[in-house]
Length: 299
Ligand code: B12
Image (tube, rainbow, N blue to C red; front, side):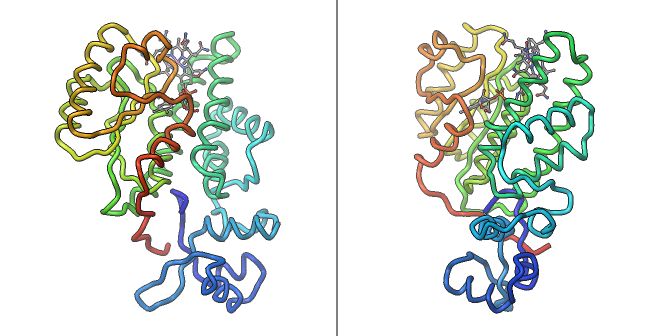
């Protein structure tokens, strides 16, 4: 189930797909569409499931707002058109348009990994390049980051409301002096989509405090997004203490981000490294199967 998923009634799915309610019920009963049940045994179909079937049946999503949400833009796949659209919306500070595109990617069933690696990372790179060559003012970069951060927080809030109490716990942070929020939030979204619960300790976290956090909770995974290091040697020294604390508790650690050059990686023990959110997803899957999101309520 996608992080920003709604549960739809049989009739809503039937209308959106242009079939009868009994056909939808039959698809559910035959396992073609997965669904949960209300206390009264009525079928509730995750919106992402209905989108998946619509795509399999090659039905256009345009005009089927119930499948993607009224605040989401229909996105069939991530290509340059979508990347250009988001870049322009962010440059112009057009929050509703940018948020609609970001929500549309998730609501259209394309997933958090694609959102991160194929859309947000390349688009923010363009924004950064624009700032570097003086085409964009710094306020536009700040504004763009704020719009993306707010859109991701909204998606995460939706996913967190359907938290499974049995879900394994991951802890995420950026190190001291690193103020990059977007990759950290995308990591949370990716993990929640896989059924994990996430404690996001936010940016600029001193290593000693991360050690306290890991000691105080049963996290199976810590993910660190490392984008800016004030003092590499200090980071390596403090990481060593953290790595030992994590290893002694059986907590896996995965690191990524632009500040992790090969020289630094060689100095960090008890760590796996990833280049993209696809690697975080793959690593989390390798840690073992997790329960899928549960407890969703119709809205
Ligand atoms: C937004 C931004 C900022 C914002 C951040 C705001 C916020 N709320 O997050 C602010 C204004 C704070 C900022 C500040 C600075 N910035 Co800046 N910033 C950017 C920008 C435009 C986007 C970064 C971003 O968030 N991208 C979105 C994420 C999702 O994409 P990503 O970083 O590529 O992450 C991917 C991978 O790295 C990986 N990944 C990341 N984390 C993890 C974790 C795990 C576990 C795994 C597996 C993978 C993984 O997966 C991600 C998705 O594919 C980049 C431009 C660029 N080219 O990236 C410049 C950029 C990174 N900044 C730059 C600079 C110079 C700075 C400053 C030093 C400027 C200054 N003089 O003050 C400061 C340092 C700030 C600090 N102390 O932390 C330079 C860095 C140059 C360099 N040599 O490295 C860049 C490249 C701009 C440029 N073209 O010059 N910045």
